[in-house]
Length: 216
Ligand SMILES: C[S@@+](CC[C@H](N)C(=O)[O-])C[C@H]1O[C@@H](n2cnc3c(N)ncnc32)[C@H](O)[C@@H]1O
Image 1: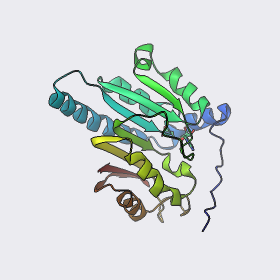
Image 2: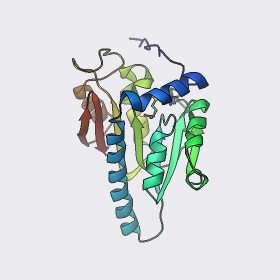
Image 3: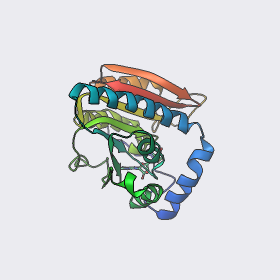
């Protein structure tokens, strides 16, 4: 059966729409920063562990998919010293907003990539990562039926023992109402399991925004 994409109400490639999203995101949901703090803690610990195990100056490589205007980039780069961060987005406008937030010493540790994760070749410019984060962007697949394949594709980009963090709005009676676009908690677990993740935990939930921490 063919899947009918849910149209987006906003054109995130358009500079004005991108700026509007950036201006409203943290005002609408100030608790986004509780999730960002969780990522920082986890990554600081994982990076320390990696450093300890390899006993050398190895970098901890992070990929953020649908990285947007750089709120998380700023949060991570200011607080995690040993990371190299890759920002993937299909919107140049979002990348420009992100770059404008970062100091040149932070920009030195960032790679900006333009790619559309709905295209078959979206992984072509990518490497292997210690952590991959997708925050409030999974629903940009524009239909939940694409999630299984997407998670399978992400799996190929993870190093051994790497971390996959998926945070999105959920479908629930007190949260999002479109069940084509948003998944229930159960559907998130099913989809991640289907893709081959064996250790999946719902580690944070605030007002319909849920974070799943996953390992292979
Ligand atoms: C809702 S915003 C979230 C941004 C960021 N993760 C945050 O929470 O601050 C979704 C982001 O995904 C990007 N995006 C949407 N569809 C995409 C696609 N098909 N491929 C790559 N990026 C996409 C948008 O340009 C936007 O920056």
